[in-house]
Every structure is written in structure tokens, then in C-alpha cells.
Length: 392
Image (tube, rainbow, N blue to C red; front, side, top):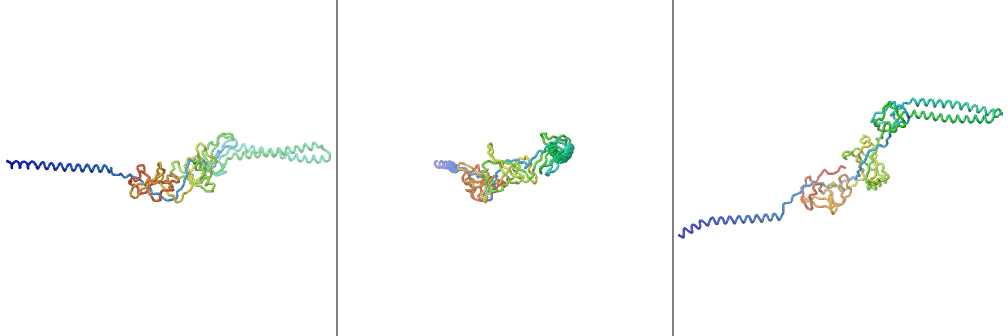
């Protein structure tokens, strides 16, 4: 009886033993997995590399520009008016034509003034003849006075009459000159080389010297001026350059500052600062050979103040500012960034000059800096090159 009982015990104990081993192994696995999860949680998630774009700091000559809003103005502008009354007979220009100085523009009917000239010349001849006869009579009276044949009063009267005719001749000569001048005014010529605009009066109309409007407007556009404004803070530097006799270059750009229209030179500046805006007006002269500038055109004027030799430059987008001042993110060889404090010089046209804190060739972050901190890993997308440099 004991043998069958032992046999049954052995048959029942093997499944229990296997189950116990399985339970023990499962418990060990779960315990090891929990410890691994705790270790990973203690280490934190794997660091993500922030995508950035960089630019290598460069050593080059950096131009310093001052930019202001400006307007194109003609060197000379004239509204042509009539100086005599009469009918407009002839228009001798094409609208929008460039005319030379003293070329005929308009002609007013000269015939009434030719008649006036003839009348004045006739009166002059008549009075000259009367004067000549009066002088002959005066000579005779003086001879008779010597023989006591006439009175002294008659001689004096004749002498006074001669002086009256002399005065009349001067008046007649003035009338002749006035009539000739009116004839000259009938031919209206260009006062200077320039561009004529649209004519304001057609042939056949009566024009008068007292008319408030003009007949046409002529503008001198070769050369041409650009008047622009700059902040008053820039005045001492500009004044120093002009006092030293330096010739400062001014470039004119279109409204969007994308296309350069012309190159000129600074001619002068105003004698006072506008107190309402804190700006000073300056005038630049352009030869305008290609007629790219037109009166009253809006332009952006860029004054080249100086050129800094061998300066370390980076795009202005690379400069960050914080409580400690200005700094840049420099990408190290291990693809992490370092916060580098820098001292800035001039910032012009999207380019900043770094006077201290950066060496040529060091890559600085220009895009993606808002996600960075000291030692942050980065993923450089452009291998140290960028198209953010401003045009020179």
C-alpha cells in the first residue's frame, strides 16, 4: 500500500515543481525589467539635437552705410510764363522732350509789337530832326546876340527848347528799346537744358502776362538732386568727413531697396535740424546719364560713411541679446554650442561688425538660436554657409 502512495506523490509533485520554477523565473524577469525602467527614467530621455543654420565669421572690409528716405528734385525748375499779351502762334517742342538752353519753345504773335516798334522809331527820327533844327536856330541866335540884334531872352528860350528835344529823344529811344524787348519776349526760349513737360496752353489761345498759370514746366534732370534725411546723431560724423574734404558716395535705391538706380556724391546739407523729427536734410548730386531718376521720385538714399578695414563680420541675425549683453552661439567640433559674449561695432545693411569675442572662421548660429542653451547639441544643416549676408 505504501508503494502506490509514493508513486502517486511523485506523479503529483513534478507539475507543482515546474509551476513553481516558472513562477520564480517570471518574478525575476519582472523585477529585472522594473529595475531597468527605473534606471532609464533616472537617466532621462535621450537628448534631441536642435536643427540650426550657421555662418562662419569672416574677416573682410566692412562698409558703413547710413540709409535715409529721399526724394528726387531737379537742379533747376522753371514754370514758363508769357511776359507779353498776345495770341499763341507756335509750339516748337514735343511734350517730354529734352531741350537745349536758348532753344525756341513757344512763339506769340509778334505783329502788334512790330507796329509799336515802327511807331517808336518814327517818333525818334522826328524828334532828332527837331533837335537838329533847334540847335541850328540856337547857333544863329547866338550870332545875332553878339551884334545886339536879338535879346538874351530869345537865346535862352531857344537853348531850353533844344534841351527839351534832347529829353524827348531819350524817351523815344526808351520806347524803341521797349518795343524791341517785347518782340524778344514774343519768342520764348529754354532758360537751361532740361526736360519739358506737358504743354498747358494750345496754339491759338490768347495768353497774358498776368495769367496765374504757366505755359509749360521745364526741369533740369542732368544732373539731378536727391534730398534725403538722416538722424541728427549722424551729423557730427558726416560734418567731420566733409570738413576734411572727403568726397562721400551716395547710392540711390528703389522703393523696395532691391535695385540700385544710380551713384552720386554728397553735395551739401541743411543748416539746421528739424526739431519735430530730429533729422537733418542732405543733398546728393547724380549725373543721371541714363535718366533712371525722375523729379519727385521716391528713393532710398544710402550714404557710404567709411570702410572698416579687416573687420570680423557676421550676419546681424547671429546676434542675440540677454541680461548680460550681446552674445552669439558658437558651434564647437563636438556639435554642441557655446554662449560667447561679443562686443559689437557698426551694424549696417544686415551685417554686424564684432570688435571683440569672436575670431574669423568660427561658425555662429543664425537660425534656430531660440531653442538653444549652453552646451546644447545641434544638427548643423548648412555646414557653415548661409545666404543671409547683406549685399555690399
